[in-house]
Length: 263
Ligand SMILES: NC(=O)c1ccc[n+]([C@@H]2O[C@H](COP(=O)([O-])OP(=O)(O)OC[C@H]3O[C@@H](n4cnc5c(N)ncnc54)[C@H](OP(=O)(O)O)[C@@H]3O)[C@@H](O)[C@H]2O)c1
Image (cartoon, rainbow, N blue to C red; front, side, top):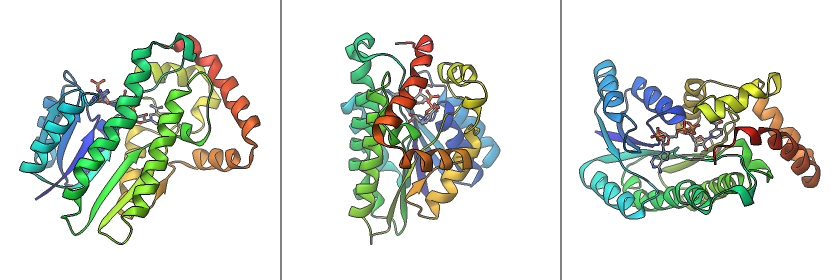
């Protein structure tokens, strides 16, 4: 009996991953913050899909808690699929961003993903076939002013994932990286997307559509997953634009979102 471990499973894209995996009959281990209501999600999924679900509510920025919870999971369950989804961001100029917020983004997006991956890989390699899906963002494809730390953290995830993929080529472990465009998840992100009007809605997909695409392609061992035709087109155009032009273009749009900043 093998399990899929999903981080940030309490809401947004992580919750959609949990539902879609359950639909596929996968047993689940869910990580999220205390108060994420994982208990009711676990009960619903167990009842509806007759799968086993175990959940762990703790702050993944806490490296000691991450290690002890992961050690417990490894001792008690067999994992063959890791979905590293938990991540935070925001829009604000660097000098208006509190130090704690910068640290939070790095600790969650960069440190916890790297440590969890490192802790789980020996365990994943015990399975004949295993998978890692890391959630990056379209924001990884260009530096962006007024976000600065977030796109840099997602560029880290992109580089980390593709490096790992190469390192474990020829083993049973396949690593994929997902680059979603905008998604209506938490209310801050949703307000931002609504404010962008038609432009914001162009690459928009639902969390369940993104989760379904990402799961199918990860299990088919695709390295890079860009969900939706508009996002693929966007990435293609970005690739052609000179860095300075692309940086100014995207940053100008992002600057308009500063009014929705919560940091
Ligand atoms: N939304 C977008 O437009 C968008 C676009 C591209 C990429 N992404 C990426 O997609 C992933 C999911 O984003 P989302 O929009 O679905 O986010 P979300 O709605 O904010 O959900 C994030 C989940 O992670 C949990 N979480 C947050 N901090 C945590 C911590 N310190 N320890 C453990 N769990 C924690 C949250 O718990 P609570 O429910 O308790 O807050 C929540 O369940 C992220 O990596 C994000 O960068 C999002």
